[in-house]
Image 1: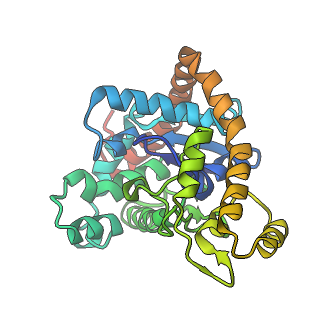
Image 2: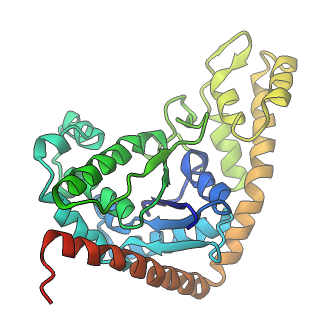
Length: 315
């Protein structure tokens, strides 16, 4: 049997180049090597999006994003989490073997607690739902950004605990973090994140690209603006980049203009492909529906075994 991959993205707004280089690019690069399940994590998004029209728009948007960046639905099962009821069923089963002190170590919970936020049960339980997202499909690898590495570790712990209590059933997956892409920098030098307002959208207009790049904070030494260079290194090879930055040392405006040109060339074909997809949303929805059917069949086969293991199958 070929090796399997599972990963996903929450439909919480338009993706930026940090989402792309941090995780989404891996889905495209690995689709020829792995049997791939790529999810739209809409139930996870309920922690922050509680507006039906916005949710519908975002789900369709992520499906189009996946296709625009080059995922082939003939090779990849693209589906939405809510089409597979086994995700929430298995999450409850995992809840019953997981302690509150264990989940209180999760970064997302600790971050929310540190900000004195009122924490929803959904935010607290997020790692359990993510564990089910992964374990239902027996993946060998889970391509994620560095910020999700702990969730894959929690998933492995949960699989081991279930296997210990009820008998071997779950495979222990490995997190796959793209080398050199652990943290994609934003325009202010922090991690690129919608919550920081420091992003370059993946399908930006030329005008938006120019505006975002010109806003990059230029910290420097030896004439190199590091924040500009770090973003530039995502889309240009190191040798030509180093030559450019040596030639233009100290000329920040020139270096920003070079980054603008390179970003325009990189983003334009993606933006054009997505614009084409927007003309035929019915085709995208049909693809999602098919993906949901395949994912549901795979997950249900695993759930049948889980129900037998925990002793609720009587007939």
